[in-house]
Image (cartoon, rainbow, N blue to C red; front, side, top):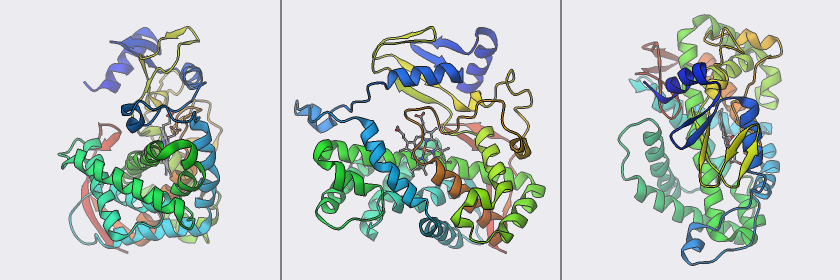
Length: 382
Ligand code: HEM
């Protein structure tokens, strides 16, 4: 039995907050929000691993300052020209995979993450791109429970490359990407070690959920020809989709929101307790762990009796249930807007430009994220 199923059964018997060995499992969204807020009330960053080894502490920096420096860049990267470039990169990847049998989970991850990388580092040359690609491939393989080639070596080489890139950017001209505020605004306070860790955290964040969500979108589309047609009609007619994807494609937006409800990635958010927490009847000590699960919040039969039904039109009414595909403050996903825009653009490619013939898998496997089981097929041009 997978862990999520264990959680579901225990929730039915014991309620939404319970201990599993030494971890507290928190499936009540209100309690999860309170615990997360209390745990990160002090969000001072630890010294980098390098500084810890050298016994150095470094300046005190709050992670909120790093998030705040990223936010204006994220807004800039959601502007039409950047979304158009994102769509073009996804298009190029799909067009290079035509007419050949494919693992569609892998294709979804690869398309999502490779097209997002330039948002993090805009000016990678072919050599550094290849270094990063090896690390990302190893990480995706691990997420998908597949043999991962030499992941520690790939990770170390990618870390060294990011370090070089930060130093070069700090001394050179700015670019519209997420490396820029790290290298040109925060390097002085962060120090190079934490600057590398922050950039790597961003690269890790784009490696998992966006690819998983893209695979789940393709999974649901391939099982639902009627929705494929509805989305195709809307997206073929939508002019200038990149200007405001959500308002220009409301049906597709509902579809994407429902996919993120049904199949929220990642399945579990594990957090180490940073400070003594005493809220909502929960008592936690530093060093312990708590686990939350947006997926099970979205599949709570007491709050949403038809939780197992895939119904994008439920979003026509305001939801009466908790919807947390991007987690809880103050660590909520920074790229939610870009993530949703990317999935809408993905839907447009899949329903208007390409045709994906699939083996129509019937079930998901619960890995790090919900993953369509044995999902294969072929992409052709329309
Ligand atoms: C549909 C796509 C995506 C989904 C479902 C998703 C989901 C999530 C979730 C569940 C978290 C954990 C939140 C928490 O700790 O409570 C997270 C964190 C994060 N995500 Fe996303 N994400 C997506 C796309 C993106 C994109 C495109 C970016 C960047 C451009 C991004 C950047 C981040 C970052 C930086 C964090 C860490 C936030 C922090 O610790 O302060 N995500 N994401």
